[in-house]
View 1 (spheres, rainbow, N blue to C red):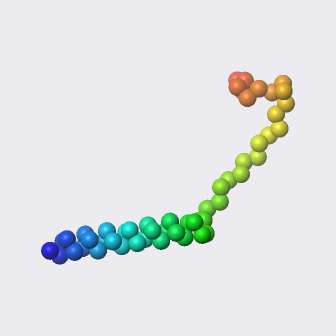
View 2: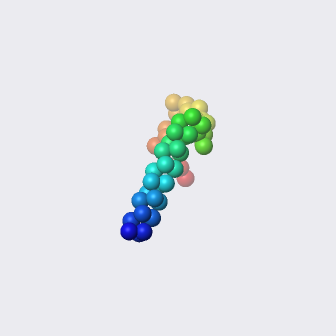
View 3: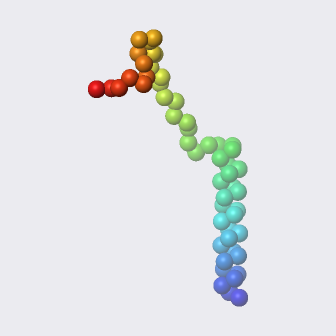
Length: 52
């Protein structure tokens, strides 16, 4: 009986933590997306060309 109580308690606590994390992530993201600089490509430069 105590095993079942411990499993249920820990499962409920995990669900609470996950739901709070999802809610807070919507309000205040914990990371920012990296914006990569795209180099200007000319018509002569082909992206599929082999780099030696």
